[in-house]
Image 1 (cartoon, rainbow, N blue to C red):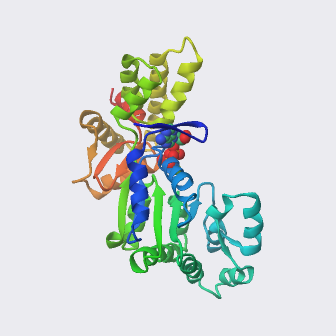
Image 2: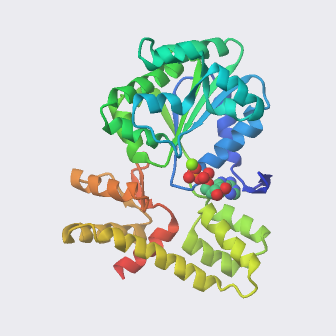
Image 3: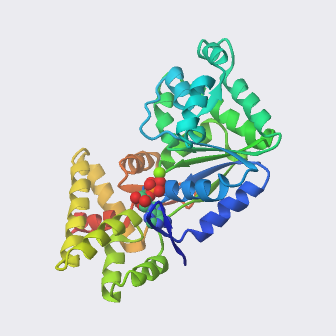
Length: 349
Ligand SMILES: Nc1ncnc2c1ncn2[C@@H]1O[C@H](COP(=O)(O)OP(=O)(O)O)[C@@H](O)[C@H]1O
Ligand SMILES: [Mg+2]
């Protein structure tokens, strides 16, 4: 297992994932790739690592990485301006910010205003620019935090989202012009658009999960932690990188850091988050949650093979709240990270 430095901080492992993406990009585009996994499992980080260290310094690639985080996209106009900019602004911005070219498509100002007025078709214009680039480059389009398009989905612009997904199908399966990767932890949103836009035959999935026990052990051994402490950390925090990194900072800073106390407090916070959300439900549903929690604790996961529609809707709410993680491919529900399962232990008492 490798520990590299990326952006001045340790970057743990992800060998398998890095190799997977490199291989994926070497192939001709055939299918949309949905990259999913629990919140904070490291999807964005590994993807950005691949873009910065494997793609940008290889001039056979032309890459766009659109991160929709922090963007409010509820209308056609806001959708348009979230990733397209007039060519004059594009040219100027790229001079001062090298990354700008990653985040935006450039379209002639006049054409863009026609697209805005719907005198020209947005996706045809994008297709034109990708066709041109793909003559001598391999094109890659990565969209992170796709669930930000949910506003569009629920508003009257539902067709726009469908058109966009159809455009992604055209880029991959039909024309093989451009790879399309879609990242999110919101598997409920994936399921929704997946069935809506009939993506079954046109997409693949790659799960990026929290790290496993061996990876955590190797890493924390290198950090100089005792095995007894590592076991305790694994029990409470599982393979959640960002929670372990936070704990490590305190562990290293304070001579009298009390690990057990810290982990118990984290568990308590997860517990209060769960209880707070539980109060939104009627007694029947609160009991259902306890049943689900018990199964997750006893078995490691709650199976989705044989659930009712009501139960599914209920589970989706907990997944959207990022307390549970809903995996539509493995047909399992778990805590969004290990600490929520520890919180559930307190709920069922
Ligand atoms: N391989 C890794 N090694 C070290 N830290 C990581 C690694 N992957 C992610 N992180 C850290 O964990 C946190 C969450 O990662 P992020 O990529 O934002 O998760 P996601 O996109 O899956 O929600 C960030 O603070 C990030 O720096
Ligand atoms: Mg992310």
